[in-house]
Length: 414
Image (cartoon, rainbow, N blue to C red; front, side, top):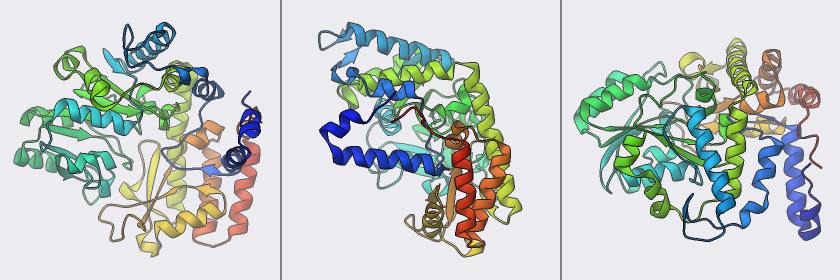
């Protein structure tokens, strides 16, 4: 059982904020596609005494003494990651998905090299070439995007690659609701002699459970976060083959290239997460995520909402508010007032700024972790419609309260 008592005694102000956040999570329906609800076991590992141990280096080759126990932890995490994703090499030390991505950049490219990544405005990620990010400042990114139907235009990706001859091509997204054709992306990369990097941060849990094609057979290197659909601690992971790793040395790119000491308490939580993900129950959970996403997408469209690409193949969907003349910023706040949490998000060719946007991104990993099923997605869609279209906030909030009481969260946490 997790308890706030230690924090209350040491720092009542922080304890109060933590308790308020627990209440918020319990009372809200979490539809942010990148968030989830970790197990008590994962939380316990993260909050353990392993945080005390410095362990620069890798198992068996540390720069500090007394690492024999954390070596066991890291080796278990590595072996479980390799088993889970069916690969030969895994580095479990990245502090985040962004750190994993930067390490691959550091290993594969030189500053100023050209690469391709999905346009952030079309569903890509900040670390795939945004000009405000290191990936856009230190390297030359040539973006690709989606067609008018909201799908990746692979023919156009090929045309761009033939024009710019990139050193690397990134496949992966943060707001793309359709399956990615990794085989096609590898064919394009091979044609121009580029390295194919796949960032599967959003779909890692789906990949682990066989609900999305795995990038491992096609990508030279794959990165991911360990939270989101994977339902682990906030952290990163690099996966590859022994052959590719021998060429680029991803271990060296992480330490000493881009990080110092690993977070051993987080690596322990990753190991716990990977063990959970290897279970039959996890596969059923991932199936339910996809079922719930499909049900929610259909229910929203039935109630008059437009979705980019007209639906979803994975865990998320992107609501296009342009025909309603509404902004993502305002609707995010409105839904939050009735205890539905989602995030404003740009849609392809969005006329509004990233701080305002014309879209909302929604996903089902967290509500599925609470136990909600397809029938409950109908109720969520109705609550969203009541709030946004009818402006019946009282009716929307009543539906949310019904669902959060039916599916309680963290009952053992006091």
